[in-house]
Image (tube, rainbow, N blue to C red; front, side, top):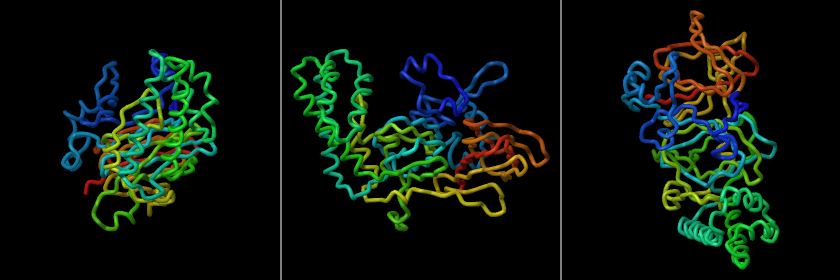
Length: 392
């Protein structure tokens, strides 16, 4: 991600997590969301001062967002787009009803995959029992460790072992014994690890595996056939981004603010909080198929270079693919976000006045007062993901 954004790792970042951070909050100005409040967007002014975007909106929201937007969404930005640099398997999770997600794949290692949606009908009671059993077994294993064990290092040790489906506990006996409070604990530790590995793969095998590649658009939302005209809003399906093999994925994730409910953390150390009941209560437990989440961007009539992929009550997404010779026209509309995932672009008014410029990995919140503008590429290829919220 650092290369994508043209940044360098800072010493404090590496010291805190052992490596550069794996996610960047592109736009965050939503009070009431834990992540948005923890990592707020800040505006830097020419005099060296800074101000959080949420604080600016408290005073100038009518000028920046417009009255129609505020009437529906409040004086805030109800989006939480992120750039994700995924190099390991992330937790199995869900979100509150109505919250959907879109993943625009910027780059991916050959063979990279994600897990999305249950591929078989799930019995909630049985799954709850299975996950709670795994939670207890992981806690029991942790009790066998010596005080002061480096749990991050333990995770780096066991994660590749869990990823090798057929690897036996004896393959990591020596380093695990070194982490235990007593060598005699190995027999019980080995039994727990073996049982946890079975559960690790049982959960992953219950989800669809989706191969990912650069340029792919994945819409994490309840398939329309399951809503069946009920009027119920689509929600994010169960998902675990990343893969056991550690094949890297760089993606732009677009979602609405709201909590994340972890159902299972793939035996991660240190042990993090999970909420099995909340996750299962929020998720669709009916079988889906991988192809139900794949979306193609299609040309927008009478707007050369503009392609649409998502148009739902939650969000609208366009893909602007300009060239230097043929700019893409963006009509005057409600506030929206721009995310440059390839190349770079310059933005001009119809009167040829330059209003801004963005490079790869940069994002912008476009206020309502900007009006119509043209997007021209600074290099080829260039692609900008444009995200807006419906006002009706």
